[in-house]
Every structure is written in C-alpha cells, then in structure tokens.
Image (cartoon, rainbow, N blue to C red):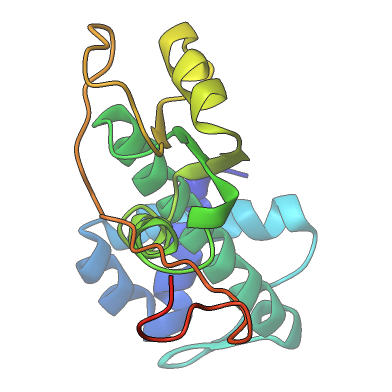
Length: 182
C-alpha cells in the first residue's frame, strides 16, 4: 500500500464519485478506478458499494477513511516538521538558568514564548549556578544560560541583559532601628 492509494481513496470517499475525484486529483478516471481496485485487493475487502451514479462507502470503508485521513495528516505534519528542521527552525535548545530566576519574570516568559514560536523544538532546561552555566556554555554542553553576575570580560561568551533583579532586605520590625536611633 502506498500513500498514493490512501490519497486516491480519501478523494473518492469525499466526492463519492470516481469522475469528480479524478478531476480533483487530475488523474484519469480509469487509472483512479484501477488504483482503488488494487487497494481493495490488497486489503481483502471492498471499500465502496458501487451505485448506478457514484459510490457509497461500505461499513469497512467508513472506518478505513477515518484512519486514512489521520495517516495522511500525520505524514503531512511529519513532512512539515522535517522541512522546519531543514530550514533551521527546529531542533534542540539547551538552556541553563538559576533556580531563583525561574519562578517569575523574563526567564519563564522566555521559555513560554519559545514553546509558542517553536512548538516542534525540544527545550532542555538545566538548573545550575551561574558559574556552572558559563562553563557549560563554553564547553558546548549548553547553548545559552540565564546567568546572574556574569563577568563582563569573558571573550568566549556574548551577553545580553534581559532583566535587572530587584532585591530587598527584609528584617523583623523589632530588629529594625527606630527613627533617630543608630
């Protein structure tokens, strides 16, 4: 069985008429009829009940039509995914992050946007301290990392500031100095 057989079968099943399906497929009607007969012989059962004007799906044909449509859809999706990979729009992205940056803000928002824009890409996330991430990026174990306190003079790494962290010190009120006291 070839994909061509499934495409032809789906077209005839949709049109319920060989001539209309042959026009839609731009295939000669006798060739289309022969391909459907070949498919039925291979399967061992009839897919259509032949009528004076057109065809009607048999019970087995109705079930097979659902599966054939799903198979063709999966083949089309697989081809589209492969084309995206060939154009460099998919693959695996390995990203490090410090765990304190992962709860809210630019880091999880970046991961979410990446998933939306590259649904077929694999995103491998690695929690690690900033120094470990720098070493992993230099060695090729990570593609990128969300790092705190990166040295500005690292010639092997490019950097882009994506956020400024706001940090406050909290202390119990009883321990805080009163106004005027030191």
